Length: 342
Image 1 (cartoon, rainbow, N blue to C red):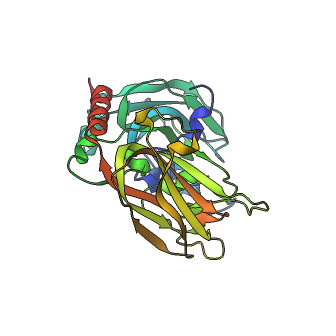
Image 2: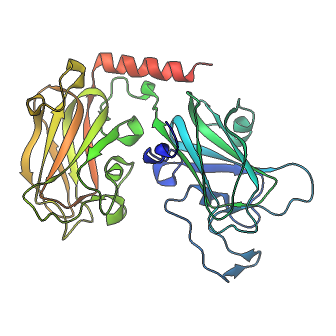
Image 3: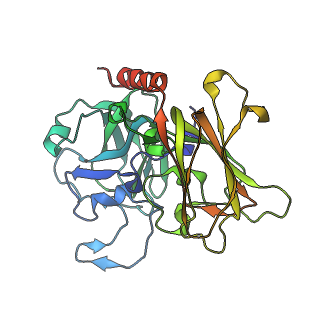
């Protein structure tokens, strides 16, 4: 992956994806938790607290001794890091001149001391930063990590830390259980969509419920005879038994109807062939601001699905609950073991 292509991948550290800043050696001027806040940083000039100008980011005091400052983030979505953004927005005379990022794969739920004692692998070497901007760094380290450590040299402020990558869940949690095959946290990926004028289709498969309309996927108004759609590669090959199409918060702009198709790439079919797709949910009317649940009949295996909305509109979440096939679970387990070895 070259350049800034990694920006299309999910942010593994985002708070709304379950990320958390578990420790920092200093946060005198601004709290460490701001690093993983969703959305861009904001700035209101001349807003002073007891410790000075209030910044939407993490800011340490001026160091008068040697050393450097650091913060540790537990990823909400463990996986392979493909790129990091060290965002210094609005930090002009107080940004760190250098930074580095390391990753670690830590089992379970480690304490801060256990995290500090873990084996850390360099993801981004010590590199110069510029102030009031987004410093982007591609990463080429093929290992699954659960935590990252941002080090700044020697001190200063960082607005956001974005950790983009590929989700690699722990398949040991799935044995004998049904899972949401379309969930980002389980490794599902949006592979295409017709339109994302108002909001990204990645929101459809994000963890949790949408808090506001902007947390979902919404298209522009169509002025033709077509319809909008989203394609999703599932976490693995499996049988979908329950679909959830959630239009929560979409009131005057929910789709009038929707359908869901399935596709099994494991059989070598061509996704460009319309005959290779099969119905999981035929075209069905939808209500505004409603969580719709539909039982799926049959036992056909799918690796991908396509949600069509008619003619356009917005949807908060798409869920596809079901069972992974035994070969798919075995393949996912083998991949996880290979990425966590050593």
